[in-house]
Length: 446
Image 1 (cartoon, rainbow, N blue to C red):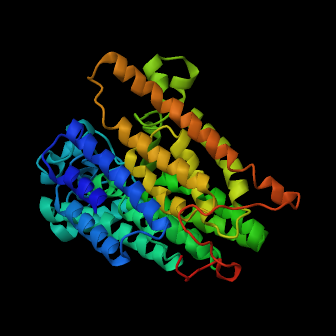
Image 2: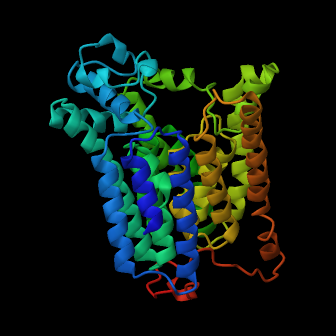
C-alpha cells in the first residue's frame, strides 16, 4: 500500500519532521488514502485481508520507532513517575523538581515546569505503567505507544463489527494522522476516542453504560465531557427525561468523583491556568498573530468556551434526531475542534471514526478538510519567510471559518423532518446504506 508506506517512511526515515521530504511523504500518504477509499467505494479496492495486514504492520512500526514529532508520552510517564516513584501529586508538583528521574530527563525541557493537565484516571493509569516498567525508559515508551495502538485496533474492531466496510477501515487505520502523529507519539487521545466511540455504541440500548464510558473519557481528558450534551439530548428524545437525567448524573459524576479523589480544586488548577493558551491549528491563533485586541486575548479561554458551546448546541440538536447516537456524541467534540482554543493534530482522532460512519457526506468532508489543514499547518516552520508565515497563519482561521460554516449548515436539512418532508441521506464512506431493521448493528457487506 503506497499510502501506508509513505506514512511509515515519514516515521522511519531520518528526516526532520518539517523537512520538505517529510511533507512530500505525508502528501503522498493522504493522496494514496483518497485513491484507495475512492476505488474501494467503486468496488475496485484491494482485498480486505491485505488492508488489515497493512494496518497491522504500519501500527507495529509506529510503536517500535521512538516518537518523532511529539514527546508528550514522556510527560505522561513523568507525571506517572511523580505518583509511583516519588509519592507526590503531579497536580501540585512539577517534573523539574525531580531532575534525576530518567523519565523527566526525556521530557521536553519547556514543559518540565508544568503541572499535569490530564485527568486523574489517566494519571492513575500512567502511575500503574511506570510501576510495572520500573521507570525504565524503553518499556515505558513501548507501553504508552502500545496503548495508543491497541486503542486504534479496538476502534477498528468496533467499526468492522458495525459496518463491514473497507473504506471505513482504511480511513481510520491508514490515515497518516493516526500512524504518524497518534500512535508513534503514544498519545492518550486514542484512548479517549475509543471510550467515546464505545459509549456511542452502547447508548442506544444501555444509556448508563454509555454515560459511564463518557465519564471515564472525561477523567482522561476533561474535554470529552462535552459529549454529555449529545448524550443527554439524544437519550431524552429516544428514551425519555428520566433516563437522560440518570445518564447525565453518571457521566458527570464519574469525573467529579475522580477529581475530588485527585485533590479537588488543586487537581483542576493546572488545567484552568492553561485555559488561555492557544495552538497553531486553532482559529484563535490569529488573535495573537495580529496583536492583542483587548478583551478577546485577555479572556481567550472563556471566549473559546462560549464559542464552542454556541456551535455545539445546534449541531447536537440536529444530530439528536438521528436514529443512531453516534453523531450526537461526536457533535460537541467536533465543535471544539473547530473553534476550541487549543487544537493539536492528534485531537482529530476523537471524531475520525464517527466521520467514517456519518450518514451525511458533509461530516466526513469537514473532518478530512481539517486533517489536511492541520498537517499543512504543522509542516511549516515559523522561521520561514515572513510573507509565507503570514499567509499560512491567515489560512488557518480562514479555512476554519469555512469549516465552521459547513458544520452549521449540517443542521439545515433536518428541519424538513419537522415539517414532514422527505430527507435524502447520502452515505459517506459506506457504499450501501443499512436496512432499517439493521440500524443498530448492520452486518451486511456493502
